[in-house]
Length: 242
Image (cartoon, rainbow, N blue to C red):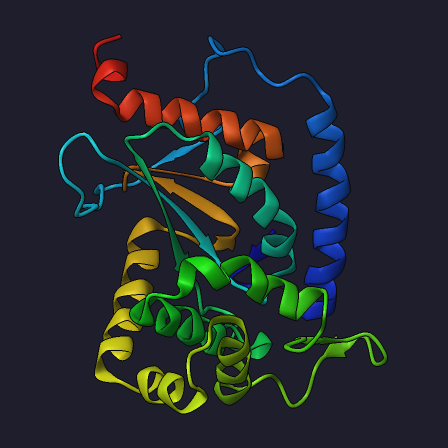
């Protein structure tokens, strides 16, 4: 978990490690039964006013608010992959990059993701970007030698080189798109939507513009999957009839 007013990269990294162990222990407890009652204000929170999704009737939007530079989001992305695979056909998974930690290069990674989305390559490069930061280190934001945030931090030019290798997009074309009015507009819209959702920590999940939650409020990684699926069911026509 990475908070908007966090304790810096190292502190957040250690916090993420502790949280991961805690959630692993929580996940070892049997997941709630399908009929378990999830409590608003405890496990999930209402978004007031609810935000429009732009999807046709019957479609349910599930959004993860994340940053590639967030260590907790890196640990969480395999869970998101499993969640996405388990969602019903009427649910649509989306990703919304946050930028509220400029000290840790989040705005650059927000621009990189939204540029990839503008170019239509976001889905096939999403997991690979996490790996480039946290596994291969080609876009590392943390220097293990100094135990501090890496300086200089990765640039949009570095990100363009990654996308050139990962998706075959010419580096120059990516940089032109990254500086475009279209991507600037996407960034403003993302920032506004995150504010309207009331998000102050990552990773967080929003269901259908109405409910927000995170792995801590849900009680663990497995519980997050179950809670999101339950909320999707409540928002679906069949769920509303129950």
